[in-house]
Length: 89
Image 1 (cartoon, rainbow, N blue to C red):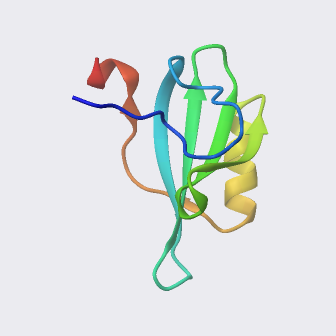
Image 2: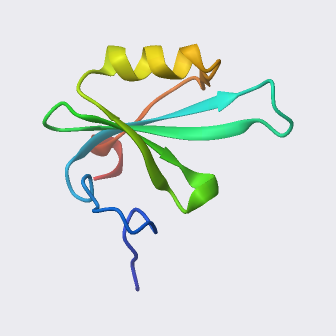
């Protein structure tokens, strides 16, 4: 079985093997709703990726609270639930 990396962007893949969990955030005011992904890694950094642009890195944060505030300021809302690394492995 062939596998691919987690991102298609040219940016360095900072979370390939060290991610802890993933949240999906949407802007419900757009039609269709715009989606961003929030990944937390095992050392406490947080990354926002945009699936619409090849999963490119949008922004990096040093805390979940900072990432959450940034997303909420842009009127994104989290979808219920969280996918953790432990659930997959």
